[in-house]
Image (tube, rainbow, N blue to C red):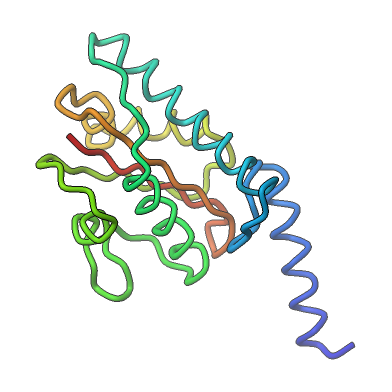
Length: 164
């Protein structure tokens, strides 16, 4: 086994171990069981968001497939390419990414986070940040999409895309 092969094998084991801890599908996985694991984490975030919104009298957000695709693609892109930004490495903004998925709502927002291993940990971090908290508790938003991925230097990448 070459050094490169050993490094690749070790990285694959670390990614799979991190995936099991987070409950996420490995990057790029498309099997039914892997998607179900990812959906569970996304649903946990949505449930936590809606619990916070209920405390301040906002309606629950509904999951929108277009926002979910945009959020998941961004989390995967950050994890695969090792960056952390609202702007993709190709220069697209979150608005452009969301619009590319077909979402036409007039109100858009995005929260990203990296490094938190669980849905609860990422929600705690977002709620402690005034800007992220404002997005979560913005009663004008009606829809959400959540993305989560494992990889890159932060190991865990999260995206919430909001619409209304």
